[in-house]
Length: 266
Length: 155
Image 1: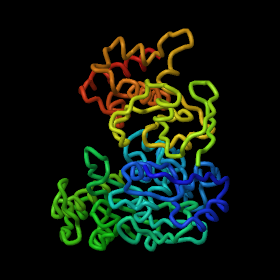
Image 2: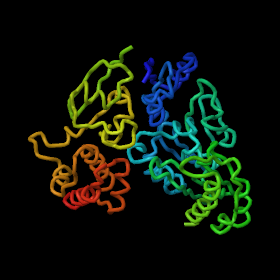
Image 3: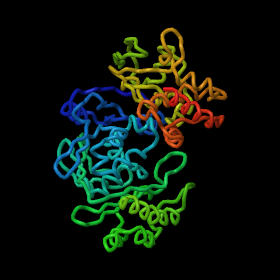
Image 4: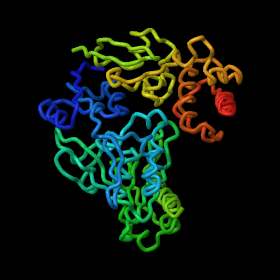
C-alpha cells in the first residue's frame, strides 16, 4: 500500500471541507473494497478521510412512506433491521446476501453505491426501488445517480448522507452469485410500486446497473414469474469473461427476474 | 505521518503510534505479538484473520488499524477464561476434531462464536451459510459444522 495522510473528522461538515480541499483524497467508509484496492495498489489516494467517527451517518428510520438508511449503516444492520424486514423485506434479504458474514459486518450502503461496482448488489436495490440518494449538497434520484462503470453523479467532495427508499407494494431480489466472490454474475431486483408501476434493475451485466425496459413492460402487463421468464434479452451490451458469456448473462437476467418476481409474490 | 491509536484488545487498554497504512492484522500480530490471528489469503476472502471488533466478526486483513480507534477488539487469545479454561467453542472444536492442519481454526472459532451470539440455535444450513466467509483448505468443514452444533447444543 502506498503511503497516505489519514484524517478522522468528527462530523460531516468537517469531512466535506477536507475532501473539498484534498485533491486526491478519498472517503473511507467500511473499506471492504477500498482497502483491498489500496493493498493491490489499484488505488493510491493521497489522503484518506475516515468517516467512521461520524455517528450522524448511521442508522435506519421510517419517514412516512419511506425508509431512510444512513450511508454508513452496515449491511448486517440492514439485513437484521425489523423495520426494513417488515416494510421492504427484499432489501433486507439483498443486504443479507452481500459478500460474506464478515464483509457484511463492515461494509456500508454508502460505500457500496459510491463505488458502484458493476456486480454489486446494492445498486440494483437502490435503482430497482427508485430510491433517492441524499448527499451533502442535494437529493439525487437513483435514475440519475448511477452513471456507468464505477461512475456516479457524485462530484468531488460530495458525500452521501443517506438513501431514502420508498416502500413498494412488493419487491424481490434474486441473484446468481459467483461461487467464489459472491458478487452477482447477474442479480435482478423487481419492484411493484404503490402506484402499480414496475421497475426492474439488473446488476452484473458488466457495464453497471441498468433498468430493463423489456422486463418492466412484460411485468407491468403481468407480474408473474412466467412473464419474466418469457422475456428474451439481446446479449448486446453484456460483458463476457471466464465466468460467463454475454449470452449466458443475458439469459440469466430473465431467469433471475422470474425468481425475483416469485420472491416478491411470496 | 503516524497516527495515535488507542483501543482495547482482549480487555486491556492499548495505546500506540502507527503508520496509517498498518492493517489491523499487522498491528495485532507484529506490534502486539498476538500471532493467533492468522493471515491466510491477505485479500479479504479466507477469513483466517477474523477477529471481533466491538462484538462483530470482521476480517482484520481488510481493515486499517486506525479504523479500530476506540474500539474493543477480541482475538483468539482473548476467548479463553483467565484461568486458561477453553471457551466452549474452542472445547467443542477440540472435542469434535473440528480441525486438520489448524491454520483456519482461529478465524473459524471467532466467526462461529459471533454466529452463535446472533443465532444461538442455528440449523446446519445456517451454520454453513454463517461460516461462508471462512475457508478451510483441508476441507474439514464437516467436523467444523459438528463442533458449532455441539457448542450450540451445550449452551
